[in-house]
Every structure is written in structure tokens, then in C-alpha cells.
Length: 300
Image (cartoon, rainbow, N blue to C red; front, side, top):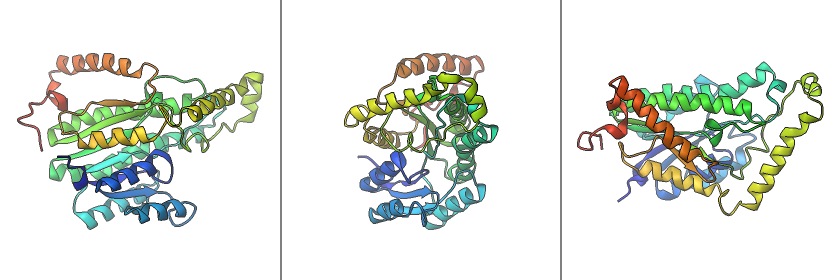
């Protein structure tokens, strides 16, 4: 029988999209869900209220602010005494020609998508280590494995966070803690509509008509996702895979899970997984892969 209904789960970035749907999905399963978001008493009040009405506990949390990260985690620990699952979902997606983004914009992208995840890891791991168990799911993207023109700033942040999450997988496995990555394909959410565009107009003018390429790409993606919103681009598929990862025992979860249309990412993951295992074996550290551990010795 699944034990997902017994889990204490913290999800970041729940005011829209996948995070919002995941909070509802886990609550429906019976989990005690803490949905975090920026400004739940202000601009995100309607979504916060909607989650609360579904039995979800909402906490303010901006992943770019360490004090808010620490405060949210402390609140969860005071209320429950434990933290079973963290889903790193908060993210922003810069769209446009890379040179047109200012350094401040590039830094803001990394502050959320990379350092925001790093802050969450640092805040929750002491509690998980003390119990010798836990799961951290980092929501990445196909853009963490494949380059999509007009998304290069986003690509950089997702490539970086994939390395962070995978590195933690090997360092945490001796303590019964799992770190895995979910890579959604294109899904119809508010992410595209909320995407920052490049601010350096002087640079963009130097690209001439080509500066319009990113908007053409986005319009094409948007039309495609709209046409397939009830099929391969339905974000409910992501929630299903998140629940499956939580339900899967330690030592059996895949490092990466691709959801939806994959553009070949599944095959890429299979290939690189083989070479990564070779690196661990060459260093005589293959035992750090949770899937390498004997089921008889893995934590419950």
C-alpha cells in the first residue's frame, strides 16, 4: 500500500502552474502539504486561499531570501517535527536573445533557479540527516539537458541545478536521503506568460530582424502547447510523476524522470547514466549511487 498519504511535503513556487497543481494533488492523496509562495497575503492571495480551502497549509517563501527559506522550514519543523519530501519547483524562465539580458537579469535567473534550490537543500538537509531519510525532488526541464534557441539563459540555470541535484544524490545516499530530478517537457502553464524578456535594447537593435526570432519561437511553442493541452502538454502528467517518485522506495527511484514530450531526452539520460556510473566505478565510489545499494540495507 502507498504511504504517500503519511508524508509531510514542502513545495516551492505554488502560486501558479505545476507547483499549484502538485500541492492540490498531494493534498488529495492525504499528505500534509506546505505550499510556499511569495506574497500569499498580497498579489497571490487568491491562489493561497484556494489552496487553504483544499486543506493545504500556505507559507510565505521567496527562495532568493535565506531568512524566508529558514523561517518556512523552521515553521514546518515546529508544526510537524519532521520533513519527508521537498519539491524544488520555484523558477523563472528568461526568454530572448542571450546577449540582450543584462548581468542583473542573468543573476536574477540564477538566484531563483540555482541558488534558490541550493538554499532549500541547506535548510532542510540537517533535519533529514537527523532522521536518516528524506527525498528532495528538483523540478528541472528538458532545457536542463537540451539547448533550445531563445532559452539559453534558462538553459544555463537548469544545466547548473541538474549538476547540483545529481551531486547531492551521491553525497546524501549514505544518510538515506534521495535527490532526484524531474524534467518536464513543454506544458501549458503560466511560466511562459510570466517570462522576463531582455532589457538591453541597444544590443537587441544590433541583431536587426533576427531579434524577433525568440518571439516567433515562443508563439510556435504556445500554439503547440495549446493544441495539446489535454494530451502530452497537460501539466497533470507532471503531478502524476511527482506522486510516483514520492511513492517509490529509496534505492529504486531513477536519477532523472522525463515527463511528456522529450525530444530525445530519455535516450540522452540513459546514455549519460551509463557513463556517469563508469565515473563512479573508476573512483571506486559506485556505492554512492542509491540504486547500487543492496535492497536489504536501504532505509525504509
